[in-house]
Length: 239
Image (cartoon, rainbow, N blue to C red; front, side, top):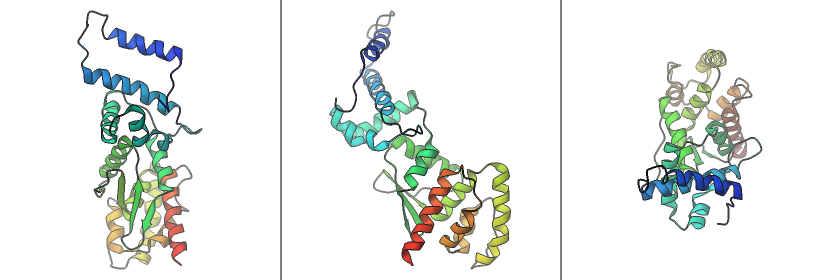
């Protein structure tokens, strides 16, 4: 293996776990797929341990499907399937919000379609983000490339507002209501339960709106800061 090297102590621990599946009056009960998943878990836990940044977030470039497929001699699709299955059975703890913030820094914003496009290299991260977005009432547009996530900027803005602490979120919504009439181009009623939809209907200048919002969100909202910088920088380049 090119990317993972186990220590003698780690190999001993792995053998003990494998042996426990055979030598406790349960010989032959472990299926081939369970054995493969166990070996994949050993590999992924070590790979992720070696691939974390100093702040604890994962460098997904070092855990790419392509790298793993070459290392293990299996297809990239099988790697993705094993990643998803392993996360369901043996979840690996990671901060998906911090990961999304890092990915947002390299996202693209199309001013014509008003959509933000990100490359999400890990299937579990993609599913986590998709689930959170859908829980907020928005939706992810399906792409042929299952690593690409595309979302209307207005729904992305609603997402980052939802990440604010309750008191901060209430203050932001209160301020947005005051300024909404000034940016509203279609006399749309501001619905605080569906901020994204309200913004789509009102069709404000997203860059101007982002400029207003960046002074309201908390410094801890990493996704929000990354998105608003992306929108502001895109607008600046187009001038």
